[in-house]
Amino acid sequence: MNKRFIVANLKSNQTQNEVKSWVEQFLKHKDTLDSLEDKEIIICPSFPFLFSFHSAFSGTNIKVGAQNVSPFDKGAYTGEVNAKQIKDFADYVIVGHSERRSNFKEDTEMLSNKIKLSLENNLDPIFCVQNKETPIPDGVNIIAYEPIFAIGSGNPDTPENADAVGAFFKSKKDSYQILYGGSVTSQNVKSFTQKENIDGVLVGGASLEVEELIKIIQNA
Ligand code: PGA
Image 1: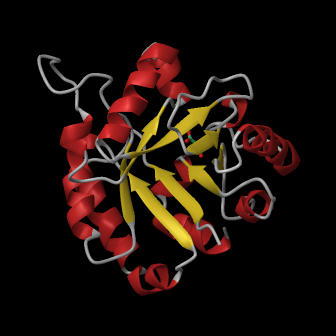
Image 2 (image 1 turned 135 degrees about the horizontal axis):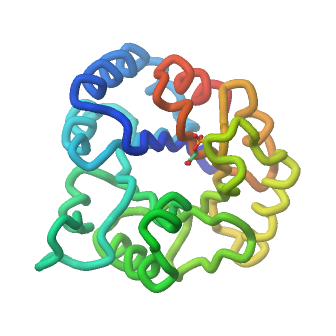
């Protein structure tokens, strides 16, 4: 049986002190989380905290993901963080989030480069799509369907529609793992993950509250 994914996208939120207390509170549930062998739990902090999360989770089943990766390899790209730098601290990377597409003008070519460099460096990309029309670069295995209206709005898509989008992508390649993202909570998570074509969730705002995230993980 495939594992069910729960990806926490902490976005550009936490400071060092907030990271410290988030991690302390989260690890109070370590034994419970470690016992959930059917779940792949992936926490995605901001770049400055990848090392802290990686160290804090060593010896546990909890994985770390980056929220972004440079479309370039190492070199003269001031301010960029490349896949070679990330790979020592993370197993996954989120690519193509709609916030990056709209705020940072990331286009299909740039996203394909990000995917290529991630794969070359053993980072598993979690590729966000906004609808069925979003092109999927070669090599992607995990697709997160995140309709823009549902992100941070408290207005999730229906599980039926999310399932239909999942089925659409799986009809292209049945090994795709499909996540749903957009206003996921502990109350609605099961309605998505119980669908045949949904393999997990990508959680934004709700992941900032540790106790809510733990419930989401348990209920997923
Ligand atoms: P949200 O964000 O859970 O706050 O809606 C999801 C995301 O943007 O990944």
